[in-house]
Length: 382
Image (tube, rainbow, N blue to C red):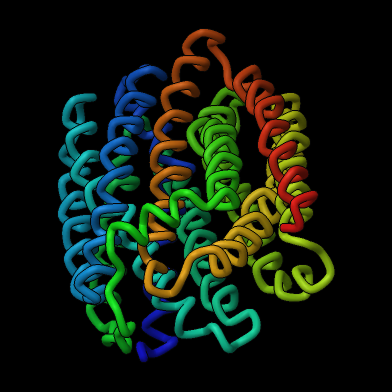
């Protein structure tokens, strides 16, 4: 089995890269002169590329029973894309790099998560306790990048952002190369097995709720840094807010095994989606730095609790022979496709309204749909 230290390092660096890109990449592109539509389109193209790519990687990994080889190759491709990012300064160039990134990045976490879930099946809370190191990586890089950008004068299009992403990509690529092969399953899955999985109604409703939640969450990730700039506040507010949010996420991941013993997965997800409505509504009217930062504690519910419950359900619905494929399908449909749609809608809405708050109000209303789906799943016994 791969050492826990190696797994923690992979999570730390992978989500550390996200800790740089989610809060700061859109403001970085704004600093290069990109419009909201150009930002949304570039990120949408990368997401669309990742939708089939992540699934293809996972199916091949399950069919060949070679997840380690797939993980090493995927991290290497993602690192190459990150290396090109500092030189991409036009919408077309950024879109091209994000496409290359999208061909590999969505495969990495399904491959890692699949191996970790299988390795910790007999350990209560084993996955969550390892996964929280990814949240820690996000905290450290988001906070550090906010400090760095503020110290450098909040200059538009600061290269510290893509260089931070590159540094983390190198870190998780090196860490992933130390993964050791896990015992193979007795039989490799066939396409009929994948088709049967895709007809599972619980999985389909879970995909619908997760995708809509992702669409409604994108405006936060894409525009929070822009909102901070609209309020005339420094980048440290963006970094500190993201840090507070992920600290709350870590707390929820740590205590999720206890919460899951008392509440059903459907109830937990319903609470998470309703928290999204409250979060986006309040964020749309918040003005001061303390309020903007404090509201990010809702992230513990809107992601930490939601993700722990989702992984619990996927662990029951997806058979071990299709573990990587099932996780990749969920990630591709929700995060890649849902994120792509959300990026485009968010960019168009920002250009139409000319400000961030109305976009957040739309997201608050949209969260009511996955909330209703989660209530339906709870009534079905989930």
